[in-house]
Image (cartoon, rainbow, N blue to C red; front, side, top):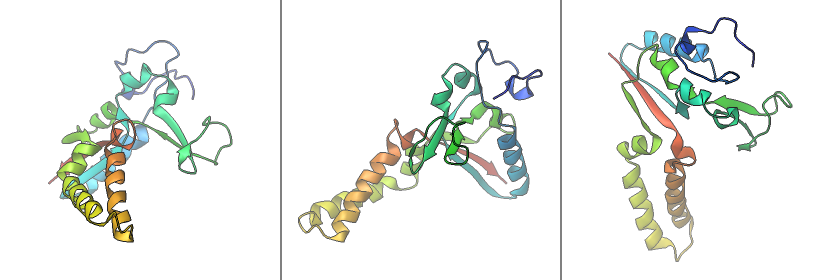
Length: 168
């Protein structure tokens, strides 16, 4: 985290209070440009937490910059380098500067469009039929239901956005 003498173009027009911090995602934008240039026909899909640069500037850093260690939230990102993963929300506006996504929807919407509802209904049916047995099929069915709930929970993994760029 360093002050910028000459802010990058990605930050032009961002009305942020002095001392605000935002991610500058030049490498993510470069990656998107490279991938879009390589794909002749198909889709480029990004799944992650996402926001705008302006929205992140108005929030505490710890809300959009996260650390994880052993599948749980980690600590301060500058303590014990290399011992935890560091991630930030995608800056939708910075990626859209390369090319706006053709679709931007919640992970829950994406999963429903790709058949999650039918899988959950099958899980509920199997659970109802086999719960009294407690066998592996019953446990798998129940697991499918709870996993789908977690993937669609807007306060957890369901807060992910699914961005799609269609090529060709």
